[in-house]
Image (cartoon, rainbow, N blue to C red; front, top):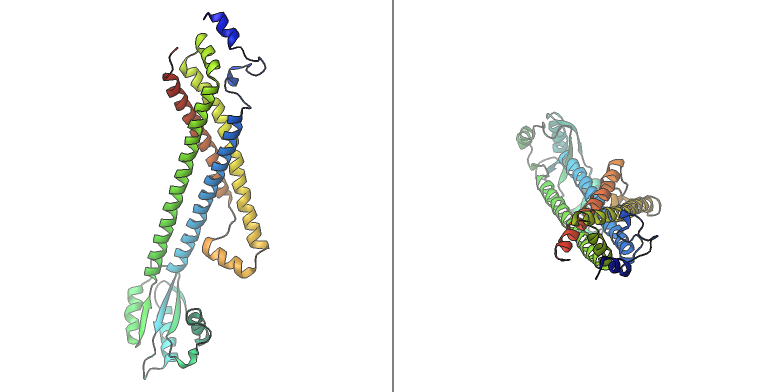
Length: 315
């Protein structure tokens, strides 16, 4: 086939491809579908990232609260006056380095701590329940807990609980959740890149005649790959921006619902478990950083796919 016949056979509308940047069809079904897909994937990625940020904040707050509070437990001992032992434990704790306050829980407060476990039908007044002294630390690192533990030995039935076991379990749980979140985030990104690969190959197949024309006039594989990369970069930016803004709006709406429409008790429980659903400026910036990252990965994946596809074709 002569070059003139080839051009006549593969001639396209001048309005559709009137510049090098329009080698890849702008308004094709594949492009629109890919924008929608990247928007969904970015939305899910941003939700995952936001969830990881909230879990990390909540875990840090829990760990900080636990590390700043210890308890002295005093068990009932025959012949010992509980009130006197509580006052003595308070005095010893307050005199310890790094302690800011010590307060003995009343009998009513102690019973209230047991009712969720034993039920409201149990008469706790007939039981000799242990009493607690809550000790608040001003300096968890510099507090002399060994001295406190040693001085508490003069009180029969007294023991010191630093909550180290609870803190270790909390840290392990937070790490497990974070690892699971990172895995989910990675799978979403991989799924996005695989979708880009299939979309690129589909676009290449539908634009085969255009690529043939470009090669006849001397265009290199590098030039063609660059044009595809430019188009898919714009697709990635558009889809990523839609998904990122959608995720930010979702968290803002969720925060509004939890603070304005749910009962106060439910809001407190949700905030205790997950923290507040509000995003700080730094959190929003982290989510928006996903947009150029996903767009760049989309462009790079498209370029690599195009170059490999072109190497398999012989003219």
